[in-house]
Image (cartoon, rainbow, N blue to C red; front, top):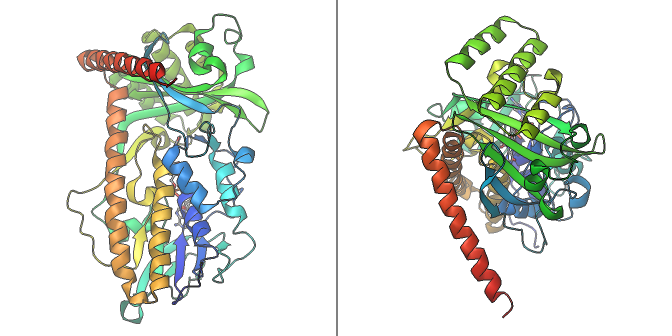
Length: 451
Ligand SMILES: Cc1cc2nc3c(=O)[nH]c(=O)nc-3n(C[C@H](O)[C@H](O)[C@H](O)COP(=O)(O)OP(=O)(O)OC[C@H]3O[C@@H](n4cnc5c(N)ncnc54)[C@H](O)[C@@H]3O)c2cc1C
């Protein structure tokens, strides 16, 4: 590619999935790009959850890092090829295939968030400051505030250690769900706690006696015919359980994640109140584990699911650091968000963090990163950096539109999987009807596939 006619400098606050993908895409494009991350280094988070990267997110990731060693970081053993919704006894209500990215026989399985973050940081680690060829990354930089300088022609960000970015053309807020940049840029955007809990853990399949037995329904639905399916079992009393096979690279053991999602009713509130009085992490873990076991029993989930839940210890539960961290959250975007030409932009969760129930947060952050990078590169090539604010407003418009869609889908799914009573009955009937159409469609397709 020809070198840009004008040099553009970009400071990215936040070295998560989105910020790092953006920096990777801007490498070798002539853009001076540096990532500023508050963590002391990229390995400072020991644990991470599994992320399902779907077709669009995967293709965006490949644009950011074309030479990414997918087999080294993705769980290729359990390539997820379908999504199944079942009743509590694991009888399918709906099963649909997952679209594959171009050029791949099947979707790779999930990827560990920490592994993906490290792989994305790998390319940036050699430099602390971007030099127009390589991108740079600086750790231990906790963002505090920003200011417009030079009559609005440049921006500078300040950190808690009294350092700053120096003047840059574009400042990117990729600082996650509780973004400080969002708070000063769009104070009207709210990030709200929802009355829904997500409680999960991972257990080794070998530790589940029923899983290896012939006739295991869990094995049949989660790992059908040497493939893998993302399974969500839904009940009629306001909860559901996600079941996901994966290979735990740290232990080398085939494992599964279970995650209970439940709407908080009176009895849960009582239990949580009790948990809140015990300040020990294990107290909270124990109460939440009891809550999951109780719910699985009350909603008559299959014995194999109850076994998987019982198999985890309270210490193995994730996100039990505080009650707030087990609650689902979502951004609420105002209907008429005012978007004006700007040099400060948002990306990923900073703009549209939402519940995990569409599995799209990281996927969308990756797409934001590619769109934003293309806009910045295009301005550099046209050679007129005065066009940047307008180009950034265009990016904001498209990004918020996509974000609103993702928020709608995710919170809609959250409502759907925590329905109870007649709503749950309508949902189950609807899913069954859709499944009949899916089966007819598959039949028709296979009839004509030989021609
Ligand atoms: C349990 C769970 C499961 C999920 N599963 C999926 C899934 O299957 N598929 C999917 O697509 N998404 C999933 N998500 C959502 C996904 O993790 C997020 O949407 C994604 O990480 C967003 O990327 P990001 O770069 O915008 O933010 P993050 O990855 O959160 O990165 C933000 C970065 O900013 C840094 N930062 C924050 N504040 C500051 C500051 N003041 N100064 C400097 N740095 C700062 C943080 O340390 C962090 O590194 C899941 C989320 C959870 C919690």
